[in-house]
Image 1 (cartoon, rainbow, N blue to C red):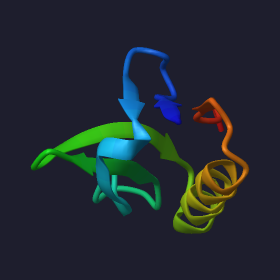
Image 2: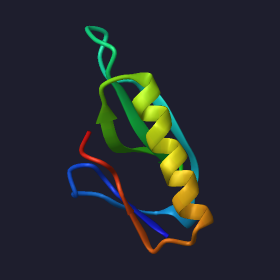
Image 3: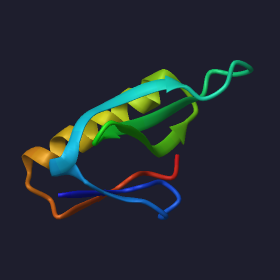
Image 4: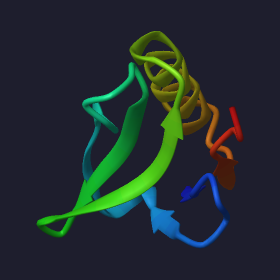
Amino acid sequence: MTILSQDKTILVNADQVELIGIRPASKDDASCTVYAMARGGAVWLGTYANKERAIAVIDKISNAIGLNMYTYSMPKK
């Protein structure tokens, strides 16, 4: 499976991903970035309004992997 980043500029092979995580996008607001660690480097996948939304996106990625989807496109919002 592959994961297409929110801005459609990065395509990640999910088989090479070691983890998918969340970190604050900014100190100024509640937005969070979803990223993947692949081959020792962090790859940005998308930024969302808050931690709860970012967690929901990771849950959707997990479901897509379980369903053997070919490509999961990160949601815009």
